Length: 196
Image (cartoon, rainbow, N blue to C red; front, top):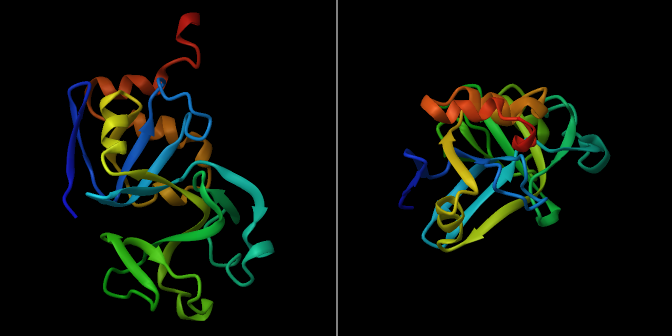
């Protein structure tokens, strides 16, 4: 996996697993408008991530018995993206990087993917956070780089708790607010700049 350096508005972000894609106001696609995407895999063949700020009304316990008590609140499935919405991806944050349960595959530090075929009792006590996503976002070779270059995404560092927030609705603004320089100004932009 080779990281892809990307420039946008003078800020440099690196397209690599563990980074966030934050939708810019120019991104009007309803699948991604106002989203924050956690990148889980980036290589020459493309990229894969999950939208971390779109909870669904479906309780995890309704579709994955036993996992409802393990996931972070709110205990619902999240809409991870338009690709494969009938499948599920589990993103986990380890309590201790040296104590990974069976079925855990590291993505970036303590953050990784967890195989949902792993017995729940084997992961209890090892996770600081777990979220289950229905579907994911995927890009072919160079597609994401092109979208960043055209101004659809900001590429920014993630914090470990971003994917596991109790209130995902405020994530877009909070991520933008913590960015350096002029990028932070976007956190206070009105929904319709023409009304400003």
